[in-house]
Length: 504
Image (cartoon, rainbow, N blue to C red; front, side, top):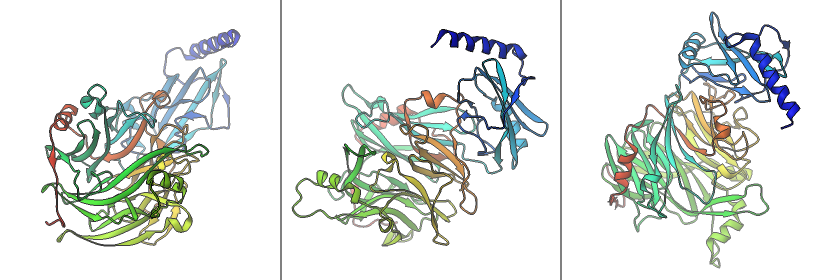
């Protein structure tokens, strides 16, 4: 750094501090700007749940100091320093007062010894609360390494975060372990599952205090379960079974291509430890099942793809035709009394648009289906063009959710238990790291400006070298200890029994 510029910054910072010393006061002398402040994270005019943790932020420039007043009526918080970091108790008092209305935010920044007051903005406080917890997998944004994977849970009402499971607990020398696909029944942390691959591999199912390792591999099914969805009431999990491959493009902005060269769908009875096929057409690639909230309809995606008889290397053939693989959204009825599935019916023909639809998720009231749409393929987190779309299942209207999307990737998403919020994965900050963003959805299916997961240090995500993967809402925390999961995984596991049809 230029020495003159450095001295200027030091002197400027000293002048700023002299104005009010260490007291939490706003500057008395300043220039006015009619521009909104450039802050990170961008919380300008966002809508937040009444029970969210404090929104901390910093100036997104080279300011030496900042001062911020959050206010509603007689309540106010004044923060001063390099970053704006309201205390949790003060914040909760302010959001409770502003419930259903808006907090006014006045921002001042000191640069080169001169304070500037920016145009105020609002933080809208919705009376709709949000589930207290989310969970996610933390992973380096790499395509070759899966060391140091954890499934974590974070309290949205404060900044508390802890590990649900750490794959290093089962790593032995060069024998590593991959973990993925955590999922819950009706947001219940006492009923969850996740997969472990490679060393001590198997599916872990926690059900009302009992933790088991399931060995789901069976000659009658394509593979062990991959992408799960719990039935909302029954001890039943539907999985897609996928033979997943990964390869690379040379002249494509989407450098990494993850794809399936075969996939089916199975149903697993948690109590009876029985599994059966429900879709196994070799010319259909089924993936991403999801139950409707009443448990009487199963939604999923499928792409029709046929290999010519002359093909000897399916992986290379499919990779060379990957931009011709389009997934549509389907559904099939389910009778809880007989455990029988009906024939499939088309919900959304993405291929008619020359597009590919994945990750259907139904709102808890059954009204809206949100999904990810991209140019082709199945693994949209690696596709920069991926956006979120919405189907109104009552009217049939289909639209891009412009208010949530950005110029970069939007992919995995999850509805809150009250259907008022969605959390979704986005790479909008830098195009590399996936981070959780949250938005309010009203009764008409309209979303508000998304806000980034609040952190105690607003600069945390810029310094954090891992991506958030599969954000899922939870009603409370998982209380099973990581070592307990590891002890179960180190055991032999229970082999599933294949049956032609599940019974109640």
